[in-house]
Length: 340
Image 1 (cartoon, rainbow, N blue to C red):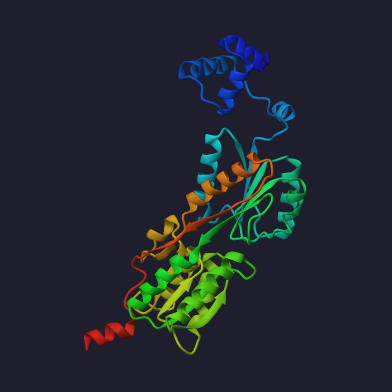
Image 2: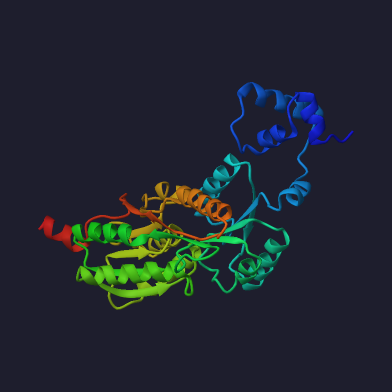
């Protein structure tokens, strides 16, 4: 037998509105009343009719989170932060990935409109506003990371890489390093370009020369391939800054294969502080990005826009910081001076 919300309310001796509030976790309900409603729900195997709810309220309780790829270890904490915040509000989450494909991205945007989501967090820098135009036209709230500026239906979360990068440069300068190379993320990525600019300019301010600046994908094999170009350069750097931890791990692997010791001959610095960074050998010095906080902030930005009648977006900022580990050490020249 299929039961309705009225049946559950009758069984629990409450109003249908109270049942709705308990199931959607939208208002404070006395513990005894909540327990009685949930017991009736369990006994009657009642399930919310989501489609009916949307028709009645004119609102969707479905949010979407769009990332680049599920395999990238940058994202699990982002997803956890977003989902936990959404579930605390009784909202469902649709999780999608672009795989860096424009065709796939266009298809996802259409599907999101068809699914009638109330908001979308687009936490991949491979999507521009133009690609998300169908969402804007449908009046769907969006939050981006490191976009340009907030506006109607759009909030922006700026991850302040410059702070962590400044700390990392200061760290290697204190270790006596003077020659650096930069392996940034992929060309066309807003985040990668921002990080590359912050590294190159930050090194210049410290009178350090970036002898080689390379772009590559956020993958271990891409980092390994990029290092091969550095190894063939006329002058070998004593420190390599990488646009992500995956790139850094690939770089360390390629250096080891080439007989170059890390950090004795070359120090390596990553960005993200993914779980594997501390498990690498040597453990990776990196710039921590608060990824779980990024996910939570993205949800709260969407929630605020959805609730506002004008759907006005806002700007948010997250700080980064250096986590020094064993992949950085005094520059070879500095060690040699000490031993003489």
